[in-house]
Image (cartoon, rainbow, N blue to C red):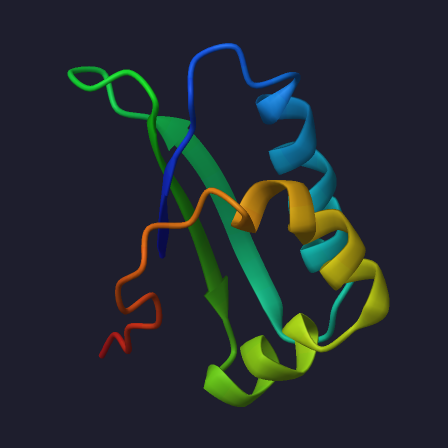
Length: 87
C-alpha cells in the first residue's frame, strides 16, 4: 500500500494510476490492485496492490516499464512504510 498526496490541479492523475496498474498487472506474481482518493481528505490517495510475495513485488518494481509508468505516480508518495504482509 502506498499513500499519495496529490496537489489539486495535477494533470490526469487517475490516468497515470491506471497506466501504472496496467504495467504492474503484466508482471509475474501480480494478483490485484486498485487505487482511490480519500472521501474525507481530497488529494490523499491510496494505491494498493496484492502479490504472490514480497519477492514478486520487488522484482516488478525493477522492470523498466513499471519504473516509467510509476514515475508520475510515485513522485507523490508519502514517505512511510509501504509493504505489508498478510496472513
